[in-house]
Length: 207
Image (cartoon, rainbow, N blue to C red; front, side, top):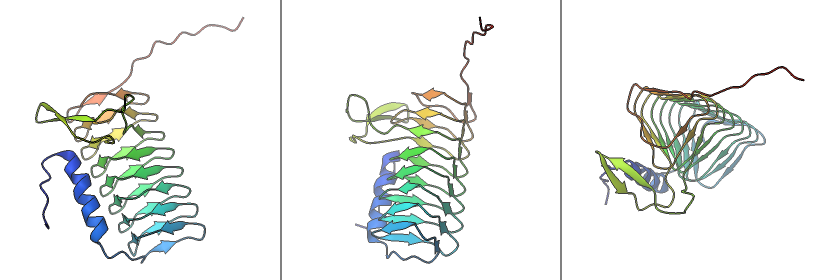
């Protein structure tokens, strides 16, 4: 069959997987010395893969995108146009839309990252429950079992995260929302929302 029903967020990952397996992959862009492309990988003409990057196919890196140095792009990842994947990141089985910036030392797994998102350093998407159970997600106000053991997050367009933001499996964040530094997101966040952590600090003179 040549069409997919993508009514549920994780269907996008399945459709992406399907397309990557059937593409005619080719490297057109700049792959620096010391970068490793393994298997079927497409690098668009104006894209760059920097030294120390390790890319496992099937994978797609779109026009004007810049990957690395020293990052790990794992199989079934599609990176759109004008995307920056910073130093020391790992991206696995994910759809990263146009204009996304993934700050250094971040992990994106089994996730859909909408256009123009900006992820601060150390942003981590969890894609596996601690109890190893199947990940559930809210779909139209109903909790649905995705049937998947591994499922990360879905970020709408224009989402920003601060440093060390943590997102739990199956969470959705609406368009243009901000997740502050050190926040653990364990339930869905509506669009145009700011979520920040208030901390209780104690300060005293050294004795």
